Length: 221
Length: 221
Image (tube, rainbow over the protein chains, first blue to last red):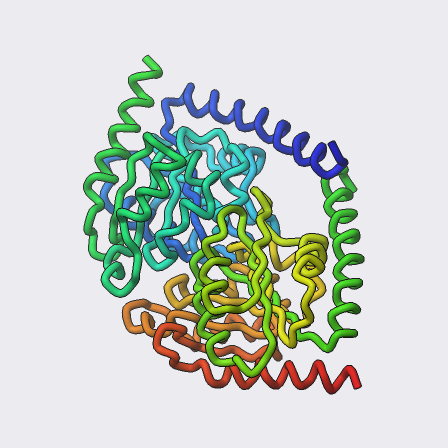
């Protein structure tokens, strides 16, 4: 094993340890924690805003990952939802330590914590944050070949959301071709095609979200 | 400096050394080498195909980077352009060594070599390949905030191409807002809004490309 591979292994192991602590803590607080992963511009924040609008009977908080700026955190803050910006200043993914520190700083215990990761379909999937599940967000404008090209990311998804469904008719995206690729690497996770802009398809995603929330609380009993 | 930062520095330095060799070699052969960087689904391959179609008076070759699959290389091969697939098998960026090995394997000397990097707007910008220039590709569907959120990538661009202009009317993308963000980090690189699908806007990009090609040959004299 060369130095680079060994160091990457050490980094991931150290991260996994902090992530395991995060996971234990989140479970002890009956929290559902979702790690939103997707390309730049996949529509993670817009989906988040449309979702927050529909779950006001839950206590929700957001950790907003970005390399620079707090554009997205400001958008979330306008909804009144507690949000903390996590800037990585160059790094291409959030890690478990950043999430731990950010969450401690917020000093609240929501029912649901959304962690919006850095816009990147590759690296975030490798770093466990201690989330309950990873939610992979992919837009129809990115093309239906994404599960074929980024199998590791889709393999570890607890759910997949296909966004920008209102643009479907203007693209060559085939939901069937996407699902063929997705099912080749992930047999179980549900897939929700939605348009956060029009509201189309949001209901099944929200139902899944609430179901996961109940499950977390039931498992804790 | 901790072990992780030190190793990253060493890795980048080792990469820069190979990249410098690549650059010297490409210059000695009067080759224009463009490193195409953009998010997954930004439209890099579609832009490349539309471009190849318009420059058949040049000898062109393509190194096609992907984590897995050869979907994009197959698309390029159908045009008759020499293409070699570079699979990183998990790695989120191409590096100078992969490009060196791939190019040696092709054993041709084109006027223009396009290197399509891994779909990722973050990491590829950090790894010099020895290219003449980086061309950053961003689609209108990704949103006009990208230069604000990924300043390092746009800072190092030799040119920027805004793709999917045919979808502009269906999005909130503002070219002015994009350019404001882009000019804040890069005062000199040209920006070409195009639709590879309709051909709109391709002419200035092709003119720039040919100008760069002449410049490489002139500088070599």
